[in-house]
Length: 87
Image (cartoon, rainbow, N blue to C red):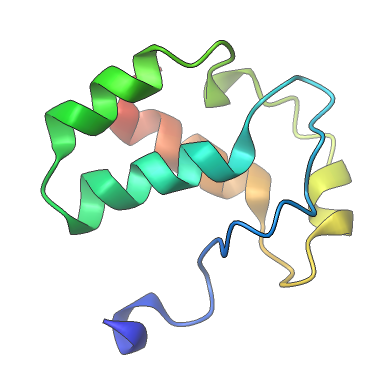
């Protein structure tokens, strides 16, 4: 599994927070991993729908990228997750 993940995955360190838009970035990525890897698509979609702020509201300000110690392109990853999870 590690080989398939490569280096482009959220480690849930929380350094990207707080998001100016109020998106819980690491939780979005956690739900995306349940969707992708654990075949819990419906469960992940339901939990995502219950989040107070959807990932689709990302303003692409880039503050999170500057704070991420792993250099993840978080706005792009949020858009991809939102497409899978429903908003």
